[in-house]
Image (cartoon, rainbow over the protein chains, first blue to last red):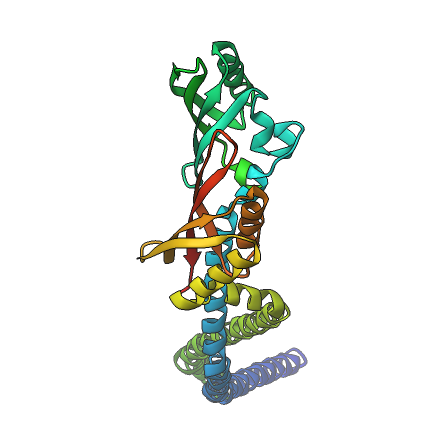
Length: 185
Length: 167
């Protein structure tokens, strides 16, 4: 008898624990289900509110600002593109002394014994066509060398034609191609 | 024995609730939560974009003086107004505008002018060019030609210009 009584006690406590565990599990699963239903129901409302805020963020004023900024950007691009291409030939044509590489004045490249009679400057091709007179072959050669020594600002020099006049002076035509920066700085 | 059976049944019921109700609901919840997070991210990006856009506009507006100058430079100018400007400028600089022609260059958005000017003074011509270069309008001088006599007298100065305008 002594042995049987404790055995029964053990069994009922195990049963009790099992029942408690089962009850906890059942309640927990039902509560979880309820909680999930509650949380899930809240989400569509939150999404709706966020969508409203998103549509506010896409308001017409945003589109107008985008349009305005696009227009300004296009204007600035057009302007800077043209402005960077702008040339300043008055500097090139100004009379003066000194180094051409520093002053960018064409007059500094002219031999003292050379006279320019025709001047034609194409600022789109950066080409200059000049014709004039000088005293002899030597001064003409010296003039050619002056131009040729101005590389890289002068990219190409060609003596197109030359000849002796009745008064024994030489006439000539030069075609000169300049680096575009000569006219832009 | 009865208690044990009912406990086991409750555990099985809990398991079934978990498997057939809680788990699918959790999947649904997780999916919706994912949607919510995506929407929240979208809103955050939209808000950031909006803030950036308006701060950029504010920045652009702070350069209003420079923008006005760009507007003036690109604003279309009527043919007659520009010719009037050229005539006035040449007079001021001591040149005579002897002849002119113009054509519309739609490819480059320019009106191209060819001017024939006369002055005995080379400096006057340079001043004229300098003022064109620094004009409020976007003017590009594309060609210059002139002749000088052997007695160092200047004859006509020919200038080709491109006046830009924004359509």
